[in-house]
Image (cartoon, rainbow, N blue to C red; front, side):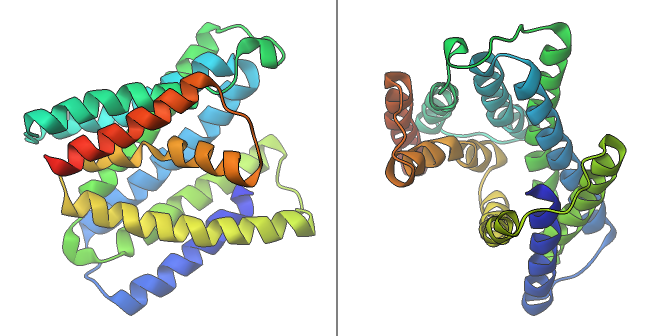
Length: 249
């Protein structure tokens, strides 16, 4: 999926960036490329952690780190949210952990939370979180070009990893179709993410972006008819409350 969707979204972003325009500068290239590396490493390590560790621990811990790292970075760099927004951030951190805790250890082949799994979990959470911080540092006059350089670096890293691990194989036609759809959605999401990070405080925009698991769970309920746990339902309600608190501040 990633081997097909990443290059396609890279091409789509390049076309959009050329149409929108923008100044390609050193910071746009540097911060964009580093953000892409962080996102690619995050995906790689997240899947590795899920494959060898307990999902019920790996998933919520990763979600908290993805949301928490940009919040801390934003505070350090000068963000000063209001009291209501701070409450919303705290609620959002709880919500994203509860929504992400969708599978219990009894539902899957039991895995131990080893030191390696722990490092992979922390690594992917920090890498994902830093990708938000880095892309937010790109200059606003660069337009969408930082996203292009982020996707270029991520695509190259994923391809190298696939070659080294022996996973560089020809995908099935159905996989290609789904990956193309994912590329379109990924492109739209990345453009919206950059606009949010450039238009609001990092600590607020990033934590709202990190609530995406709630949308995933909601769609799984409607489209795939999946059952959700009570914890996930509570988490989705808390996610809505967090969005309201942050946006109304």
